[in-house]
Length: 171
Image 1 (cartoon, rainbow, N blue to C red):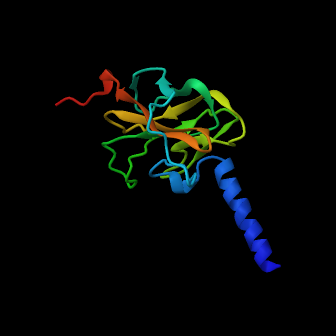
Image 2 (image 1 turned 45 degrees about the vertical axis):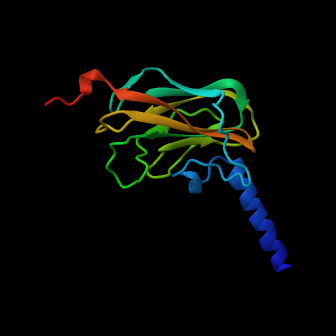
């Protein structure tokens, strides 16, 4: 009986991990744990857009994921190649103002990742707000993994935003 309960508990945990957004084990590589499937190698039918091609440190920036087809899941981070903090991938800032179908995950710092809440609903688009840290400098790649179906997903869909001209460091 105890073995049966342990097996049932593990199945519930695996099901919950896939159905409630990206698991924390996906934080670094942003790769879904959808074994035995791997990501698509053809161009993604999705794009990331922002309200502006530049950001101002500390000021919110709206980010939208949309495409020519619906999607069930996503994972979104802002990554800086110049970040000198403790996380190896340079995830910076925090996400807020998420729709009811999304939530934040704290991969490296509080709210630094946006992800889907469940994989049941097909979304045409998702818009979130990213707030860069006040001390951020340089370009930032907004990077997403987008899941159309459990076996069909794209890793590394991205767009780059640059620091606004009035905040450039001159010397």
